[in-house]
Image 1 (cartoon, rainbow, N blue to C red):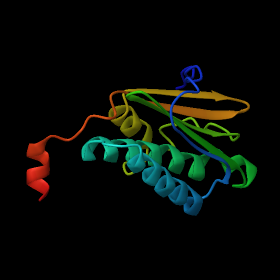
Image 2: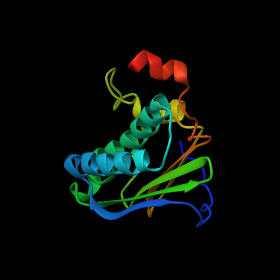
Image 3: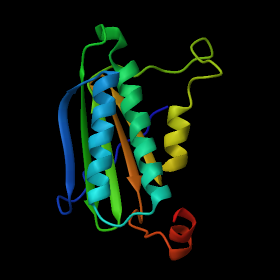
Length: 156
């Protein structure tokens, strides 16, 4: 199932951009770690919200690395862009691969949870698939919610 992607966010705000990253598990993990470092540097963010954002982005990266280029012999790239615009964060993960529709024959009990997980973690998710590739857009609203003192006391 696909839905239209979001229009391009405003050019204002901080950006994280990685283009033409080789789509494999190692590079997906590296980009996830670089994104997490960038996100930490964006300022105060609740630890739970931070984990939700990084996990949702990781799922999109992992899906691209694992599935997008199966029909092309596993060779392809991933483009990632995150834009912070006020208290909103929009992360776009794009590939030039082929969308793989899930069918009962390809589903298993231990697989197929990535997209539902992204939908549960992000405020809005769109997946736009065409012959040119797939774009996953994750939107997080009010992502700068600062953790309250009671949460800090629990960690200390």
